[in-house]
Amino acid sequence: MDKARLDEVKRRNKILQACKEWENNGIKISINDFYDLHTTLQLQEKIIAKLDELDSQKKYIICKNKEEIEDFLNYTNKVICKSMKYAFFVANATKLGALKLQGNIISNNIEYVISKSEFLNGGCSIFICSCGLENGVCLWRGEYDSRVYFWQ
Image 1 (tube, one colour):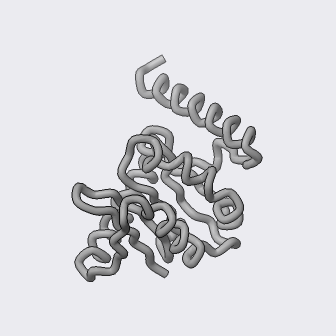
Image 2 (spheres, rainbow, N blue to C red):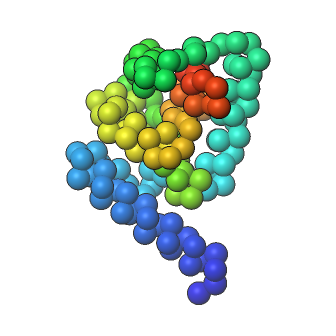
């Protein structure tokens, strides 16, 4: 088995493990709900470009560190449409792939979803955006402040 094939098998096993963990918390997902790595990286680039655009237009909310999750939740409730599919960047999304979740799953399980984000697992961000980037919300912890970006 070549290295690329071995890496893909390892990735699939980690995804299956994640699916079982989510299912143990009442959320049914499958391996088909994960983007491939190439698509995940492309989506990440588009999101970062969108954040750069919002940054240049000063369209963000600066959060107090102790209130950043609450601020993020407030804007998530305004942005998420229960009938749409969203890309969510789980911890290690660049190794597993971003996860496609229905808006109602996000809304009904937001605490669990956030607990699986990069932000609460050693990273600096939470990304949730519609698959076509029509709307989204992001919490980004920078060196000097935390910001919530949202667009509709």
